[in-house]
Image (tube, rainbow, N blue to C red; front, side, top):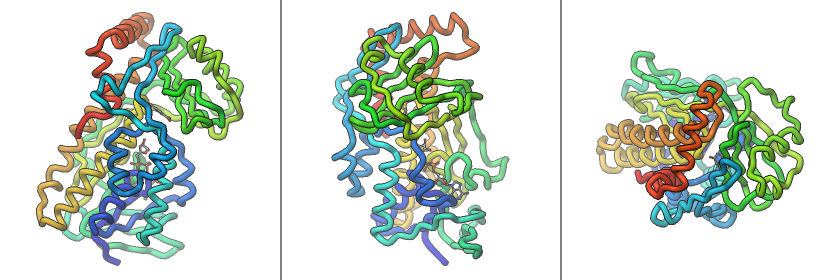
Length: 390
Ligand code: APR
Ligand code: PHB
């Protein structure tokens, strides 16, 4: 078969790219190695920058997001047993963030895609990308035991950190940058009201904690844990006890506990691959970069990549210009590195590091004190949290 674009991976990046291309009349096939249910079963951060909300609105996919998403004008930082509010709205010149689960965005995008009759191959085995350094790239896979092949003009590698796209690039053509953090996040989803109506990021001597939410009746809470902790060690009671210990007295008092609906441990990593384009193969989203979840930049970065990529491909077909294609990698990476810096900084500020000792803790305490008492410092936090302009 022949299509204009093959998108590898039906996560948020691939689905969003497919929707943006479809809106402009560019035809794309998505090839995904997992099932649709598996993709919808993954729970990830849920804080959307205004630019991401605008993109979904532009696609006409904002209805449920606006009905069910929670608009937040601030966040709280908790340390030394007290909470301090950062007024994101005021400090960023009127911007907010929207709390709406990534799973819900994926569901909205999947539904719109199948309604408009665009094709997604799920459960594709042995996906491989070919000849992207020539004018005739192609993607191959095995579907129900049958070998399949799609010839295309471009391949979009939206297949996440473990995907085949980045792995298919010649080692000498790619450079990677990485930091692995010496701890993980234990996350619990529960049908309980959130501790506060805004997110609470906590720095505590026992480790980081985050109180987030999916709705006013569903909480998503996290505690920093050891990388070798197993889920078997963390009963629901053990999780709630540990979270309560790390919260300020008022939040601890109002914490409502309940059985977990989902519980998982995620490692934290910063990672960037450069460049993000190899001939007719483009990387977008987690295939090209990973941020630690502190600050929830992952999905927002994926959205800004595919916004630039869709514009570049549309310009190629409509205006017969490759200017956007040629600028894609450089334009993305500038934003990527700024989000990497912010996520690394917020992670460093809020977590307990095994090797920085008492001096490291004093530095965190001084920086937190400065952050909540200096307008300049809290403005810098706010403008990054709500999203830097493209
Ligand atoms: N062939 C086809 N599909 C693949 C392959 C492969 N070889 N390898 C991986 N995939 C699929 C995965 O099953 C997954 O559905 O690619 C998809 C990648 O999706 P994500 O990992 O969600 O990555 P992305 O779409 O870039 O989303 C970015 O999601 O991971 C979070 O923190 C991240 O919030 C960010 C956002
Ligand atoms: C979440 O709700 O899962 C979440 C929110 C904010 C973060 C990370 C995760 O910084």
